[in-house]
Length: 192
Image 1 (cartoon, rainbow, N blue to C red):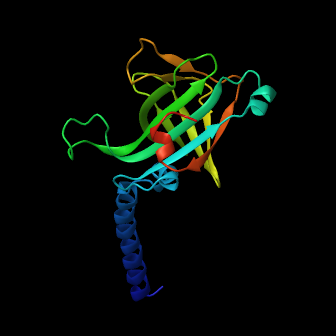
Image 2: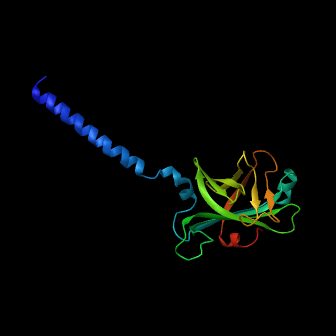
Image 3: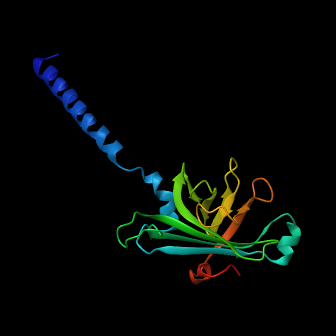
């Protein structure tokens, strides 16, 4: 091997190592696309963005599923400032939710709220102070809500309040609820 070929080979190897040393820190400094992607598919990360999903279960459905406790449900997902921020414009931005449900045997609409994040590859909407939560999986015409098998419940009360709280739990193991996209005004009021 000639002196030129050896020098060229060493220079090429050194350049490759330098490029590799630069590329590794740059690639790890970028936020993982998967950490935001599932949420972004449901709702863009733009101030004031919101989307509503709802479902009312008819009498025939409830007869076929007699153990089901949810008779109507709405889920509002929104992006913006944390709802309890004291000073407008200075609070943290993120994905949040409001959930309303009419349950069998309950005289009033049950409500809760919290923050949505990503757990693994799935959207998780949870209630603060260990109030449980739900997985939200998008589909072509709506979403599916599912309970975490290790903690299958969501506290239906204002976050961190336990007095008069109702725990919404699956009526059967592995239960999921299919909701459909609808106008956002439907999520502001009580489930229909």
